[in-house]
Length: 467
Image (cartoon, rainbow, N blue to C red; front, side, top):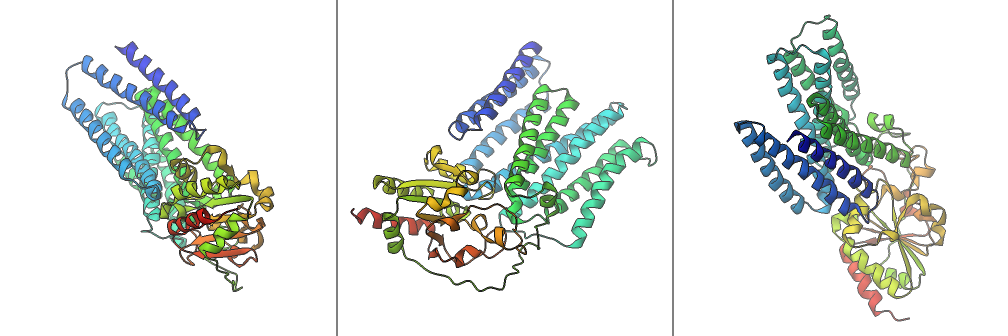
């Protein structure tokens, strides 16, 4: 049975690799998820069968099976009910559960080390490291969840920065002090102290991070959970946990660094909650922006006389659940010989790939999705750009205003289009909390309406236009 278990784990590892490879393509991402999920299911079933044949059925095994079944049912129910606008919160919630598991495993296994008389300090340090990373990811993901839900604002007081540094130094120092017998603590007391410190550190770690940086934070916290899983795998001598944790951890770190590069920000500035030039939410420009309004009929007419149109989606599109209407608008325009592209900013939305998933749900073909870097130098070729729910990612202040909080962040150069129309419900600021200078550009007009209502009206008007 042991050989069959190891073979199952090997096949599961292969499925993780294939699934991760497929996830790099939106066209094959769903299949990649299915393959990786099938591998994990195989590993779980093989483990349970091995436990049944390995000895008498214990209450612990029964509890584990019940927990797996309950988790499967609850997870499926939550994912089915989650709206696209709530998907980032759901990801943060699941990530918090992963971190919480690593935290509880560290506490329980620490007690086993003590009761088993195992004095292996190396094993204890690995265990505590996994526990601290898990605790940080757990509490940090909860804060991220609250921020994404709008229930918690950024906290950028001086004590937050000082506390985070003190806590980090304490977590690093305590294991060394105990190892060299400078401080005399039992293993259980040491684990308890580090668990509390790491949990508090996770809170103050995410408190100051700005809203525009939340996609980066979600990716980083996810990678931390992967690292904690890999370290737990080392403790349990479980190759599947080690490989799975490494895959998640390394992919998360790479994605985090790529998003930082896309925002022209260093990872340190993101984690420190620092924007270039100013504090989050501070608007330094005193220039009054003159707003020019447009109507559904006027926008439909301008679209009808265009030859190339760009759609720039943002979180507001998800809130309005108007992605399917975007597809309908695309089809109507293309039926009239008008070329349509969707331009995606790397950090549009509230989590990595949020807009890609949103549009894929509406059956937008992958070839229609253009990355910001692909088209920024060609934006002048678009007769009209429609900005739906995006704000910070098209704000020219990132390029022109050195005192702006988002200065230096690469943006989609919508202002280079011949015309720009921004569909908004009101004059609220973007997630970064700054005014959008695009609204004052000569070629920019605003259509104040719910995205779903506006797109429905535009589609209706275009269907009546003849060429």
